[in-house]
Image: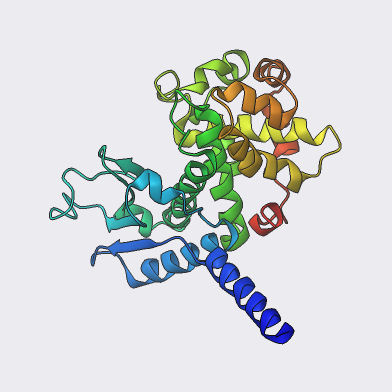
Length: 293
């Protein structure tokens, strides 16, 4: 009898483990005009991301259906007319009834040695938004959470992934380009970066470079408290979003996670200059597995 009981318990553990390890379902809708090489790399990236950053099944509640559709195409007019109208750009999009991921890949980027990497890193960027949504219980909009932490986090995460897998430091290149963002705005008026509508002027946060700079400064400030680089990024990429699900206001989650108020962080941000960039870039050896292990 005791032996049977032990076997029964072992089966339960096995079943629970299988459920816990079951991947969230993404349905791939890939247009035939995309190169086979891109499609293969897309699937490889998704496999890595699902292994390292698993999506919680509560995402199904927000989608109001099991699983999530991903639509990918090389820029063309109305790529999936039988499904959606006016699909354009890369985003986590919604129509009031559900959400989906869309990846609008520009032909000129596929032929560029530099921008071709961006056609891959954008996959990590949009995937990370799904991860943020699931951990925060859908508190991702401007009214719920800081735009700079949402988009800046996704920008930094995708660039860490790109450098790890493609050996290109595009984050450094982007932030060094002065026309993309304003150091004065970021350090003197950081509250503008809390919402898309107050930080969407050209040259203010192009490709979310200003927001990325703010995230890197936050990580650097955390490291001053004897927190390792990996732990600091984990606080920003994961722990904050878990904490965000517990509070009505983002300010409380920010303070609970980072042990400083947003005002205190903005004050420390005001002391940074463009020349500080080299000090705050992620370590060249940092991998996403190090952060989410």
